Image 1 (tube, rainbow, N blue to C red):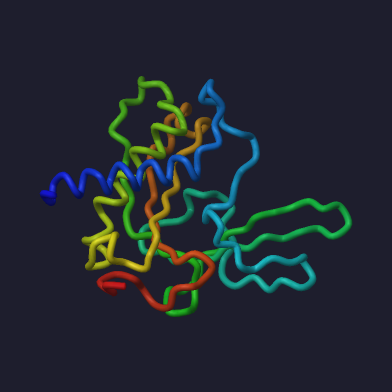
Image 2: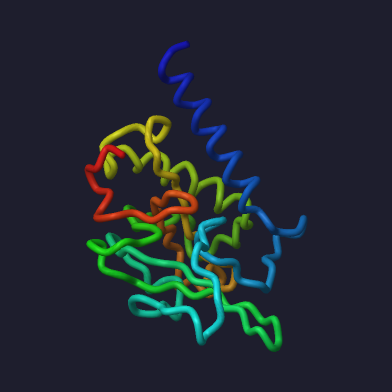
Length: 186
């Protein structure tokens, strides 16, 4: 199998995996009003406000995360009401962390173009993040222990035209990273 064909298959498979795993939109393309945590399946620290110790600076807005930031995810559960709050904190990359942001892309759509839909943004994000992975980590995604995640803009932010940035990050499911993954070849 030639390498271009193999790479195309990997991109298609990778895109399908993430679109299928992360897609929660309805047929109309409307987004769910419930914000999901940033890391799919990587919330290892769950507890209530009295028992869970947060490390780092709390992120109030997903666009506060920037290139080379490392971050942790927490899930707070109110034992009385059952309410769930997912929190993200920015931490020093030298400390154990859940994920590291390695690339940002601005979607090429013009300001006049309508929201392309969650599925299309996730497809585009998966492809762009996959393409940037090797330059950051130093090895092919298929040979790496790291997973790729991305944070696309939500519909409301897209429509007001302020945020068209897609943020790519690396993580290991159910585990933490130690140090920066740049050039790590992990």
